[in-house]
Length: 360
Image (tube, rainbow, N blue to C red):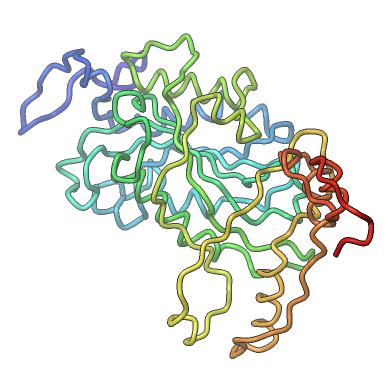
């Protein structure tokens, strides 16, 4: 009969023998392998801690800990009944977001090593971390939701990641989650549903965990991760909603994230075109409600042209009047007030440049 007062052993198996887990700087970032009923205990904790929030929280909870890439990996590692869930199952549970429910939550408890090296006899050392999937501009109208962001929280961030984290600094399973979301998210929903809502795609990844304000014991990663998830979902430390507040809370953009929209109809002629980068405006500020008027007009026009004719490589495009789109940016508090866009004579007046009214 296992000791239910402690879900996890204080030792881990190494080479057929048990070795004491010593609390050194690096070892405190590691969590010993759980007993067989550890997944059930975590699932029960998730249900007990957050089940009462169903229908009242903006967080869409996933009710099992996630340890595997997919069912094949679970079977290969001896978890044939899927006590722990898999990344693809987690993503398949992602709903269409709306204002009241706009964030998918995942509690991950994965190996620290390469997943290809695991098997039923060697489950490896596990490490807990959290993932949140939500719209980039979460405050915009739900019908505008398309670009998504993946936030990865790890209590070991301060020790594992440099000041400018890159993909290679993450655990292998964290890197695999980015790949899974980037590839599968655009396939989850149709191009346009009956309500004209858009397809989702992964636009950016942020990582956090360096600034933890919690009463949890930092030498116990599982305890710390449980506590911070409770703080986030229960509202004492909610996820920031704007880029400024994300940065202030210690979240950082992950550099070199290979994410693709996978939603623009392709043509063989596209392969010979030079690569282009699209710079999006900053997210709208607080106090701006309703559907956004700030659109990537050129992209929308190209998408519509390619829908009408899959072989289309040229189309007519009419630019929106500059003062009009600039006015939209200002009205949505997108931090463009430091740029003056006006007729030439008003710019001259603002800058104190003499001119006559008939200057051309």
